[in-house]
Length: 205
Image (tube, rainbow, N blue to C red):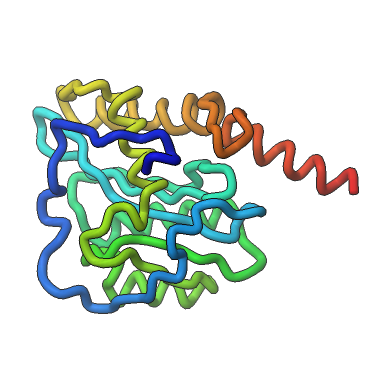
């Protein structure tokens, strides 16, 4: 977390309903906090957070590529269920269309330990990896993204309704974070620019 330049976000506590009961399927922690990878589509991380609105909670699931820290999949809805995380992962698979196996790291939340999640991973040659139970540091990059979103995008506001929050979060992810926000782990470039330069180097070899 310190290496990612992140701090704890006050005002948002334990996600309501996220940890409940024993997980159905638990995968080993294959990632082992190796947050630096040398190519895209080698390791993705995913997690869920929640956003306050006067209409009720809006839940956000994201998938990030560890190579560039780009958000490659996201999903927002009023319920924190398997569909939320599967839609985010489906977007990531559709956008990236990986040719090789990809490690997908999550926590042990019930959404990620469901049989539907495991079946989707197997069907798309994705290898599950899970944090140790209740250890947020094992998924520090996803946690760092949520802290950036709440510190830079949301800025402690409470939205009038979920639709207002969706618009704001979409703009933050697609218009600012992926395209403009600079990262120390990406040589001071935005995620999109970092990947663009990577593929330009491959072509020149």
